[in-house]
Image 1: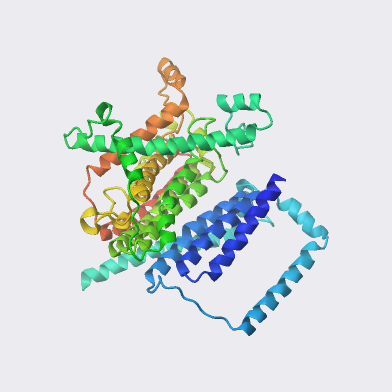
Image 2: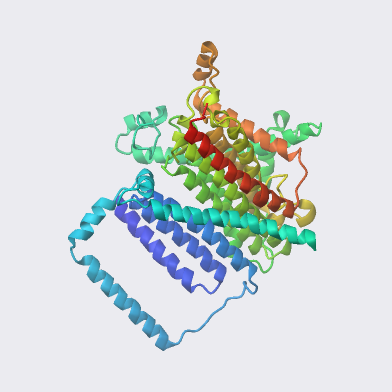
Length: 176
Length: 364
């Protein structure tokens, strides 16, 4: 009962904030609404007992992506003005039609009782961080060791590359 | 570590929690939740007042002065008086500033510090929540304070503020990388990301704390943590975002009254949180220092854990204050040089060599 109320509250917040994020005329206000919607999504993940996904959502999206978005937004000029752009009625109707079709399709698919879906839900429900770690590092058929290592090497290359770029800049400064 | 209870959601099995569970079995969940939040709020509101007094006293004694002496015993009530004055002052908004963002921004750093505080293990059973990914949580949530500073700088409609905010944003993002790498080192050594278990993994004598456990590397990691966290806190010698002589106060230039107080208080609580994390990661958290002599160890164990936590945390805070009055402020380019060319490569090397030590079993 309590969790149902919480769920509907969160979902309403999420929908409202997402709508605000795309419809506010001021870009910065839109970004702030997006932060709120990310938080609501993280809360939904916690309700689904997906703690790790929620934490990565907070760390990656709010801690990383949003900050870079904000820095880019703040560096652009003409921010304070409200940029309104009128959309034509025909395009509005077309967008509404596509979304309605998607909504009907989703509702039809989800409402049908499917055994695979139920099994998958049961199996997926509480995933601890340890489970994810073991699965990522596993070398057997179900493991993700190779993608994991490739991604980690990619990230390490990015970090070392940042250092190298910083070095090269300094060298040129000294030469000139 | 397998003997620990599996449910870490609310490890509040202390005397007060048990008493309330005994008195009101039905509503205990709500009452205990309310009590934990209320006590944290109390701590968050008292801490900055005390820390500001401490900072002024430490600064004064480093400069051979007395500092605040008039209000209360040795000026203890001085910062309470200052806080009251700030609360009753008029809140001004610069012309052309974005009202919503201008008043939203000061709340964000305060929220961030409060959220990180919920996972600090004050004692064995004195912690609001202990998520399995506590370290990830602390890193993610603390970025809210960067958001607050960026938004404050932009919303003030002032060039100095925006410059200060941009400097501060770049600085905090850069140093968050080394901070995260050092936390990753500790997570790698302990094999857990929950703060409570990180503390419990240092059980034993002083030599089992992570600062001493890895020969030399732990000490280096601690020094690097102190440098990066000082930069992350925007404190001197890395306070270029506020740099009074260049930017007239940085992102907080246009703020007054309670809005300014929010920034100022959040800064000091943030210092406490950062010192608390250092205590948790390196100094054995709430564990009493054991030196291997029976009688002294027993006496130390008699003192409750939260007192040890606060003692260690205030020791680290004193170090932060010591830095402030010892080192001259660095320039922006020197700061970036320090992070990207020195701390980051050093961190990667440290991480690799610690992994090597761990694999070879060369741990004290």
